[in-house]
Length: 150
Image 1 (cartoon, rainbow, N blue to C red):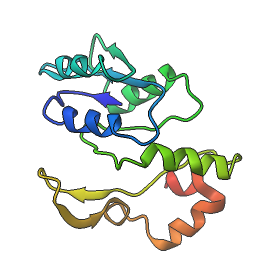
Image 2: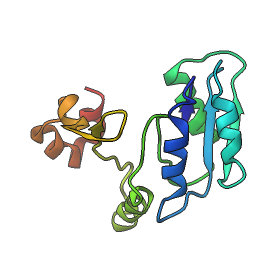
Image 3: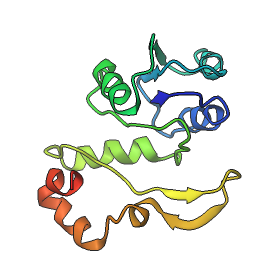
């Protein structure tokens, strides 16, 4: 997970990670030089979650911070998270099961439901919002990288 001034969102996200039916082996968080209470919020969860916290001395920006976070992970399966996500309780289990069913898979990803600040559905899905239509969904089976980078 990457964080930057996300103190207001983090409790809900970290609680959703703690509630997973398949617990995370490690939770690597790279904070990108937050100036709010983000680090304090994370530290409150280190007692109950296997968090490895890295504090950037200067702001790297989202892309470099995620690359750094991935490099710090030690597991075979890495589930990326924004600080304002909230996971379904079966997210990690479903990801693990997908890799077990297809050991040759290089990646697994999922759609997201878009909600408001009170978690009420807005009846919108992330894939629709970013133009990941049925044609691209079918192509992903054989040409994942080509589809994802276009």
